[in-house]
Image (tube, rainbow, N blue to C red):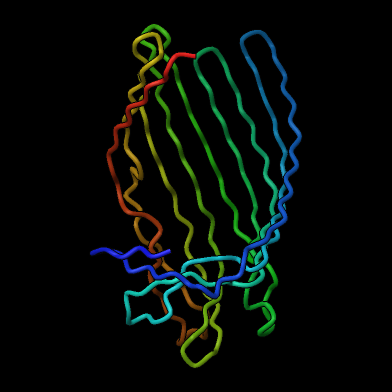
Length: 229
């Protein structure tokens, strides 16, 4: 695949190997209802094993050229728990998960095989049936994520990205007997764009860089039409 324009220079790689993966997911949930109150608890876990992972890479940091490469072995696993409470027009969901990602440098030194990080998600929704209107607030906490990088002298440095938060808000309106929907809102209300990435070292040799995690605050509007069955 080739994609070249004023902003992109992505070249294909005819030597790519096919990607193979095994994916497993298990979840158990229980719902308890009492009058207009409904509570749903869910516990889940997953495991993904990927061989010849295909990813986008920049062979030369001084060039704008990107190409696809096989990363080799990659795997993720994790577990999560979430609870959703519905009461009349109000819905509140809270979830927490813990994910481990395979460390590609695990065999290159005394490094952990997996790198772990926590995540927290909260969704708050309130519906106004009289106006066919739903308001939503989405919050996500991305925990501190450790990682490793390969330096120019082939040495490996451990670093850690600071934790950060995303907050979105939307309003959804249904029209014409719910055949047409208008959704508008604000993404990344907190305007998070970069976080600190601290490299480990001695008290005098550690360094701090920035890692891009978001594109900043933005407004959006979405129009959706559903054709009749």
